[in-house]
Amino acid sequence: MTLEAHDCVDDDDSSSLGWSFDSWGDEAWITDVIIQTYSDDALFLDWLKLSYVCSGSFCTGNTISKYGVTGGDGWCLSTDANDASGWSSYLDPNAGCQEAFRFDVDNENAYITSPLEWVYTVKLDCGRSTIENEGTSNDVTVSLYDGSTKLGERVVDYARWCEYGTSWEFSSEKQPDRVYVETNGSDAMFIDYVTLWEYSEADHYDKIKTWGQDGGNGWCLSTDPSDSSGGWDPYVSGNCGYKLRFDTSNTGAVVYE
Image (cartoon, rainbow, N blue to C red; front, side, top):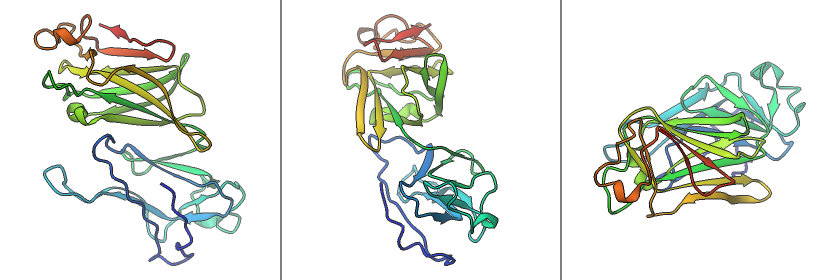
């Protein structure tokens, strides 16, 4: 989502910018926040807060993460690295001006800066009306590779609700050629399809590859190779595997039992 920052006034702590997102349905729980500009008109940020507004048993609070403090040292958002010459005493000394800042939801004191040329999204789907308990209570790790180089890794511990779609977002200057999906336990997860999307500012979203199909046969993810016995047998080829590898050059998966 893009928002112009004309209303964020210098030296006025009451001025702020807000973005609203609907993250229910096909969207996964947020793992990080990226603030990016395509302009050399610098913006000073002293704090950023991620919060949610909802109702029901899933909501236990309002603020998820907050970075920085009001009136404290902050960050300069600009495509011109030298744009903060007059702000140097108010900026994080390790940052300077950057065109993009990434804030990790799991670590409120850490951020990563980089020019974000490409953003990749991996989506897993396990919804199939003819079987039950497709999700898992175990941790699921998704990682992207280009050859032997790991481009990124994400861990999620809430994949029990993956019938709504579970997705992970990565930023990388290289295009991945492999996607790994791995579990740390024997609570089996059924996956009927995996999709890899690529986003760039110029080309917007482009689907790189889909493995499997919605509502089709799929794969069993578990550390117990025999975990698919019973109701899942007609929909899973072979044994369960603790790790699955999806290559962009192939349509199937390599199963590590």
